[in-house]
Length: 68
Length: 307
Image (cartoon, rainbow over all chains, first blue to last red; front, side, top):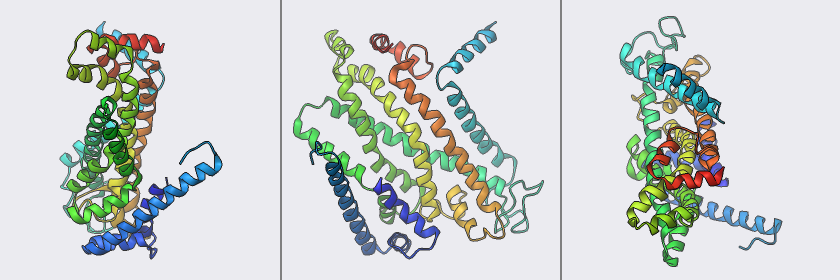
């Protein structure tokens, strides 16, 4: 779910011209700035891993029977 | 006489759970495809300049003209083939790949292979689709072909997960045991006994996935990464018209309405399919399950059991 929200930021930031990382990524793609795209992708990957880990932790805190 | 029996069969089919939903969904998609086929034939090409830019909707041009004086009516329905075609490919290719992978994983005995493949599926599923699509478009180059490739590379994992869950259950059923006892080859067992039962679930999911894929394609076109400018596509039309929203609302409203019309049809189709594929009406429902049932008799055991 958080992953979908993260993906939506790319489009949302373009629609409302917010100076965010998603818009930066689209601009980098349009100007074929490969290193910048790779960096942003790595950053998004880190956020995704962190958020899914937090999700697992929350599931454990809410229900102790869940094993991580 | 024959017409009468056809009519009563249709009425029986419509009375089943979700019959009206499926019927209205099919009618909606049929209208869209029909208009998409005939409108470009009747009128001018979608990239022809026919009149004054920003002409409001009139009797001659029902949807008005866009910022370059192109007929919006022709453009909106010219995009039907592109959008629905890409969505169809972007759903069916992952569906086939994912179902095959899921069935093979359901059959696999090697513990390490299963756990490695499971991790790969989870990993592909975890990453946001839109971000990976934007990143991959940098390397593949913008275009609709790249969008289909990316959708096939990322979306199969969801189907694989669904069909693996189903395949693990199906493999243990009695009719698979019966097929083995009758001495059918492994290939025949997979093709005629496992695959129809597994795919019913993933096909139902595919119909609801349609809406997501249409949105992704429109979103990528909106960013200018999927459909290139002269090409008529709903997402890119909305993106182009957005700048002129204050003076010409018809540039955004009509492609948006077409997009909603195409997307609204999916849930009305997918929900009845899901409930029907659960086996609630295996004996009486038409199409998919009747064909499945006729192909191999062992399925009637299953449908009796479900009743």
